[in-house]
View 1 (cartoon, protein in one colour):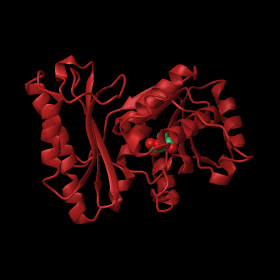
View 2 (spheres, protein in one colour):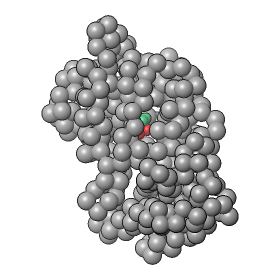
View 3 (cartoon, rainbow, N blue to C red):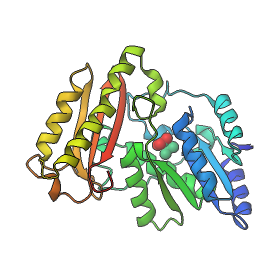
Length: 287
Ligand code: PAF
């Protein structure tokens, strides 16, 4: 596996490869777990050349978040990517990546303002900016994104559509631990006790999905109350529970019936201790 840290070298290599091969790309912030590895395996089936990036992007961390303490495990990550026969790892430093008085930003205005965008102002601007830059540098034909960060996936899809970025975004289903908790690099912050409490999140997601399946005419309010009750049976703090259309991500009014929502989707964000965790599920026909 080739390892590059220079954006220029990465782009030149990609331009060379692109003459003959499709490039499939998985952007990550490292601290790779099985969830990331599944995205990489998917990417390997899409393009002849597989590129992974590891970059803890300072632009997407809001003030007071865990940028400094975000786990950095580059050597272990390299080993895992090697085993998966990744062709190239792009791992730039902050200084190299955002050099020369960097001052451009990309913003997807509407999809970014709801849900996590409300609790983490500026977060999605940081994500879209880094992703567009990574897409340019890696010249990707395909980019694989996990559905755990469903809002991120939707925001990136919209950016690609709006700005005519010539690549296909490939969604990948959520990869879960044995007890259902969605895999995340942040799970490693949890103490064993918090880890048990965190299992309430997927339990709640399943409960809401099952209730919605049973009665599509249920109100948003009763589903959200069910979620709130279940989550607060353990000591975690709810940031939000919402139901929104996958198209707009705008939280629906509580009085509305689920059956009146186009492609309804359930979203949850909680804090377990100081660790913020998210999860989501479709409540529509595909659930
Ligand atoms: O999902 C992530 O790990 C990050 O938001 C991404 C897409 C790598 C951009 O920094």
